[in-house]
Image 1: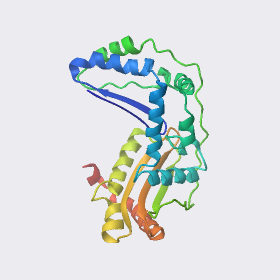
Image 2: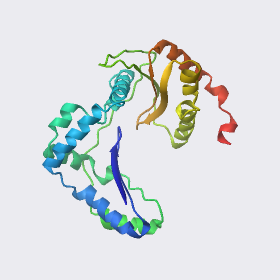
Image 3: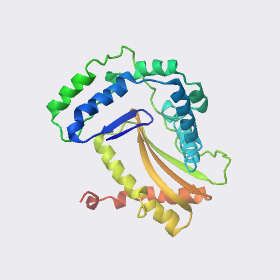
Image 4: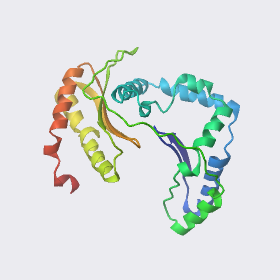
Length: 261
């Protein structure tokens, strides 16, 4: 069996995988995790230390700080720019009581999707979902509606870190939530730009010009907007920005039917 969980900007995922003959046990354990989790105070204190360490993880802390600060500036402080880890003070101050309050407000079936894949019929999946999750009470709380996202175009900022390594983050904003078709197209473009050793960004910035190390491109999909983020490490941000602008501006010439084929 396999079990994991992780947090994104707007979602928390709980994942379990088992051999097909143990599907009923999967529903039993997953529903118990979701509906009847215990929060042991001692375990909570240990978990706080682990999460705080994520802020300082080598090779990750500065990238996160650069991305979060860029999003804050680019979205004029919109809530979608907040770090999913929260702040160190928030983590330190977390208690069993306020976690329970948060859980009861947001971890409810009307704010959730149960996805089942594998060697199981839709009928059996529905039956097991009803058996193990059917008593899960919906919430009467109204979920907060975030304001529209207004992107601040053509704006540059510099953030000083206690490091000799320079990170550069560039944001491109789409003021709407991407459809499934748009996501597929965008992921194809992002693969061309920033995936692996044959990517356009790596070839131009590192291999040909020696301007940047390990550039990457990815998208963050929110309910209200989509943001494309390009990260890289460089000592020459102006030159890097010029090259990236050239690559982005010539994208339409490089996209043709052969991509789909």
